[in-house]
Image (cartoon, rainbow, N blue to C red; front, side):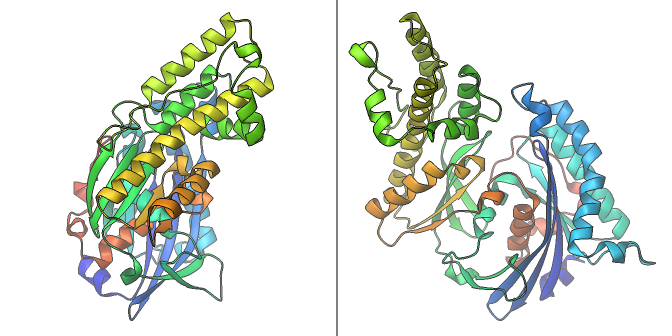
Length: 401
């Protein structure tokens, strides 16, 4: 069954993503001709649980599991409908034109992961289709390809904006990936296709987690990253520079850049979170209103800049030490516009002939399209995971690349 997929030049992959609090199912079509592969995203449906978890200030695992169970059948039907395959499913055959199923098996919240795995396994059994498990972080690496107009992509499709082509040979190996999300902050050396080495990671809080906790301290809604970025955008750079020093030299708005000069490639954001706690305490003790719009915006901008400075410094160091020219950004935090802008500027200054791959904003957060794309990498590279079978899929909340 898997051998047939490897030999096909035209395949459809249905992917399921439920690693945290997004329920997503996508269907992608891959057409191979010579050395080029044309990809068409037939559907990529995402049901977000943000509003449900917001009142708790973070994701509640069992609540996320319940919502996944409720959402999956609905999301599947919508995904099949958008792809045009629902009519086939409703016909006498009852089986859509799907060649392979892919599902996230980790890392993530295990109750959520198991919900997606069980659902995908049932589909594979019901339809008689092969299924493979995909690492969620590998999906975030693959998400950088889900964007038109990059060097790795060829011409735009004539028939749909959701279609694009790419050539594997265009992608420079080795390369580096910076994965930044609510659960992970990692620098990954991509030694070859599907061969990864984590050279740096957070020793405590992930960057996204630090943003969430900082937002809570500042009285901002969950998720914290977009809210802090939104507040930071409300002041100009000149206002920021002037306002960092409070009138009469009462107090300076300055936060540390943890481990920014360490000789390794690891990160630490727990100390930054603690420094913010003390900063707010000291400001209030001096009689300052930390709910003041300008003051809060400056604090948000300083916190955001502290995170960005560390991410950029460590990434540039790793790329120079390993002589890497291609950088992939992946994960929800990479939706931050300042991180994108400043990272590109740093690469222009520090890395010659660099190639920066960043996913479209809609592909930075968890989605099934990136899982389907990662699955195709395993197909074309004849990966061993194609032979494991649906019965061997297991959720692993701490799965490494």
